[in-house]
Length: 439
Image 1 (cartoon, rainbow, N blue to C red):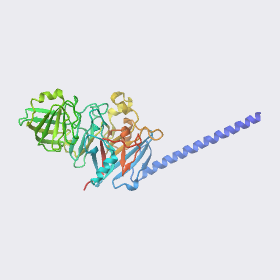
Image 2 (cartoon, helix red, strand yellow):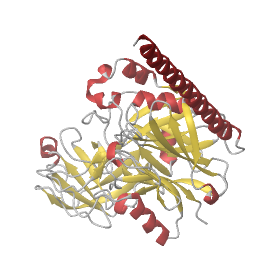
Image 3 (cartoon, one colour):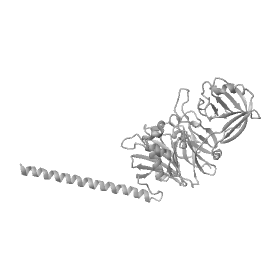
Image 4 (tube, rainbow, N blue to C red):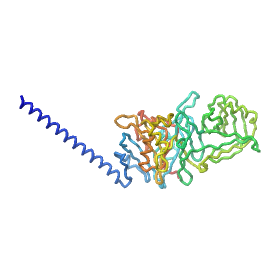
């Protein structure tokens, strides 16, 4: 019995040694495989050196890349797949573009649908990511509308009043950030404010500040201007509304035009004329203006965005949080990450891992980014702090957060390249794009 027990013990030890040896060999092979992929990515003539937080980088649809464009998937060591479309800022054939879903504020559209629509107009998108935040629907009949800045082909289509809206846009240096492009190609990233005024009569003795354009008229934004880009009607309730005509359209970041009031409506939900705008005033403020503004009243509408450079921006899109500034993670975001969201309790969602979308740039490149999440065994997503830190490691100098969750989508070279969390492409409010320059 003793010899038999000794024989069993010997076999057990042998098996354990073999298992241990196999584990060591597999670990070594994994290490070689890891170094092999990093070596390929780091030495590729189209690539930069990878940070240690990248396990692997894949080139996607490489044969279809036009000059100045790249499409990668980064495998972050924290357990997330990060899809990045890059544009060389020096590329003579490429530019940043922005497109409003359905060509108006109300309603939503998938990126795939919007790109098909653009191609029919001979506009060739190469990549697009979901952009601004908004509401998908509400009891007022608004079937989706953005809450952020939107400037398209020089037209000022949407700008909100700065506010903390359900945890989306804290009124602080790291919130309400927008990205814009100047006519000479300069990139801007700032908190943009609307300075709008309605001056009644030539002497300008009565001046009404305008809080927002194509946004919800309520106690937060009691004076809102609605243009034909909003939709068919204002969809307000209990607002005093004034239809303004004989003014020049579209609105721009630096704008002055005379107008005449052609209609006064005390019930709200006015029709928006194709050749005019509707001024909506919340009742607590509007009652006083009923004695001043009536049919045939004339005046001047003035708009001047700040910072002043934004008055010339041709294409702009808003996000909700600034992630990276001058190559460093935003200081408020560092504090937010370290406190696990306690420094901004309304934004605790940002301290959890979710699918995310973003835009970034440096002196050489523009980046459109989608991070997959909520998919165990594949990609769990990132926190806002994870995003900022990872982007700075990739060499991104400035970055903002876009709408995320199940909306997080990166379309590129004819198809959706990431894996949206719900398993299908969700309709969104607007699209930040890389596109071929129009000739």
